[in-house]
Structure formats: structure tokens, C-alpha cells
Image (cartoon, rainbow over all chains, first blue to last red):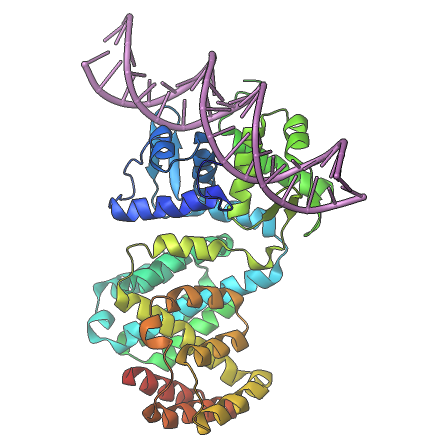
Length: 209
Length: 209
DNA sequence: CTTAATTTGTCCGTATGTATG
DNA sequence: ACATACATACGGACAAATTAA
């Protein structure tokens, strides 16, 4: 043991990598130091560095190109979900919590929009309303995403995107005819600033799914 | 290359491990084949097997004991959220967003408690009320934590704990005299199931801080 | 286009600490 | 106390892909 007699070297490296990313202001798409440089800087072996990097790669936090290098990924986190869901699968309880938490963020976004004049009057709502009216193809997640983006809480948006990936099976589909009315009530209520009506319409929408 | 010339050996191993777990009916807590057995069965090197195992360990899907073996974890509490949060929050710690998101989870917990008879009648509320009444030392985060725990959404709890870590400067302190009344109204409203009153009391509380 | 340097991908061997019987 | 099995960690070697000169 050449370094501190600590447990889980690869966990330490993950931690140090996060600090490195913060300190060096490494942005998504930027290149990380090579494996050999890392194991020299962090005073460990290349094997341990690789174990840490593979872990982060499975999480979708970094991307590696054979012969090219290691890059900080955009936090889309799609790969992660597939892996987790394939392992968890029957954990009904977890799915329920994910669902409830996702809807929590969506409801809060709707409340925020209702309560702020500038957000209620964004042109996007008329645009969305028209798209639904004209029965154009509108995916469910697009509508919800617009709401959360408009609400302006970027952290909430990031959390939501992670959670939404779990519900994508039903969420990424286009809206059906039966959803049309409820959605129009939802949007109109938001524009008028009627919180209770908007939330009620939202709940009605979610019960349909 | 001893195996198929496919890309990302460690990803293949992850996949094969999942099949192994399913085929062999390995349950949480059960032991997985040792690294040497695995690299022999899957016809790869120990390094590649280890990279795959580390990845699953970071995801919380397996647990390894030094000298003991590798075990399938109880996926009920996967640590995914903690890891993702620590990366997402790395520079997204716009205090405003963290604050708003944390309060979102707290409000939702209060709503859930109000709306479910069994949660409203938990003995913890009388206990909390008495502690406040007797002016014993009660930390703010303890009260909020109890609410979220009671609400029963474990995912929300995990997210909240991450967010709360950033608000700890004010949140870990004991409540003051001026908060006493508002808090008692909050608890009583929850017990009675008065959602609006409870939320209003909560908002009043947060404005004091 | 060719060549050389860099980087990741994979495998092997060795030594050490830990758990189990 | 001892032996076996196992994970941990390190370092070296070569192949394959990328990149730059």
C-alpha cells in the first residue's frame, strides 16, 4: 500500500475527480487528464484510476474515446436509467417514489408560473395551446419540460430530467384526444393565475396516465 | 482480444452479470461468484471484471467485502441520488435554487401528511408539539426531517438530505422563541388536516429565517 | 498520405491485507 | 495457529484507436 491505508481507493479517486472538475472549472465536453497523468497526480495505480473512471462512465457522467481521451459528459443521464431500471425492475416501491417526486416538481413549477405575472404571460403558452388545438403532435414530456424551464429553477429542472427518464415509457408519447380538454384547461388556468384550477387539471391529467 | 471484438468489455460484463443474477436466481444478500471465477467463466481478465464490479458498486447494486466476497445488494436504498446530486450540485449551488427546491420537498411532505389520516395521527406530532411547548432544544432540520420521513417518499428524503446539507448554516440551529407559535400552528394544522393553514404556517416560518 | 506520439483497452503477474474454516 | 479463498492494489506489457506533425 503506497498511499494512505484508506478503504476503497476507487471511491477516493471518484471524490478527488469531482474536486478536480470543480477546481479546474472543467465543463461538459472538456477533456480530462489522461489516465497516466491522473494516476501520477493522485499517486495511485492506473488500474485504480480506471476503475473509478469506468464507474463514472456507467453513470453517464463521463465519456471515453478509445485513443482519444476522457471527457466530461453532458448531464443527460440516459444510460444510467436503462441500467438501473434493468436491475431494479420489480422494485415497485422505488417506481412509485420516482413518480411522486417527479409530479411534485411539476406541480411546484405550475404553482410558480401561476403566481408570477411575467411567467403567466409568456408566449409559449399560447403556442402550446394552439398546437394542442390544431391536434399537432405534442409529446407529454415537452409540455411538462416547458413548465419547469419557465419556472426558472435550474436545479429542479436537472432533478426532473433525471426522474423523467424513469417515466419515459409513457411520458415520451404524444398526447391523445382525451387529454386535449384537460390540457387546455391547465394552460388557460395557468395563464389566468388560477392555482387551484391548474393543479386540479394537472392531477386529472396524471390520473388519465 | 480473446473475446468478441466488441466495444466496452466492462459493459458486456455488466450485462452478463445481470443475466447471471437472473438465471441463477441470486437474491439480495446472496454471494456472487468470485472475481477469478467470473473472469474464467466470462473469458476475460480480472481487470475487466473488476471495472464492471466497481461500476455496479458505485451504483449501490453490489457490495464487496475485502477478503469476503461480492454480494448482491438490497436495491431498496441505491445511492444513485447521492452521487448524482454531488455532481449536479457541484456548481449548481445557486443558493436560491437549492433553497426553493428544498422547500418544495418540505411543502409536499406537509401536504401528504395532511391528506392521509394515518400520517396525521402519528404520535410524533404530539411529541414534537410538547418539545416545542416545553421550550426544549429542537433543531429546525429535525422537524422538517420528521415530516419528510413521515410522508414516506424515500427518494424525496434522499434528495432533501442532499439539499439540506447546503442550507445547514441556518437549518441546524435550534428554534427561537419567535418561531414557537408558528410551529405549533403548523403542527396543529397538520394534525387536523388543514392543508392551506399548514402551508401558510410553513411559509410564515420560512420567511422568518 | 505517412509517420510518430498519445491515449484508451485489455491482459498478466506479484504482493498484501482480510475473512473463513 | 494455520491454510485456503478472496479482494485490494500496484506495475508492466502489448494492442488498438485517435491525433498531430
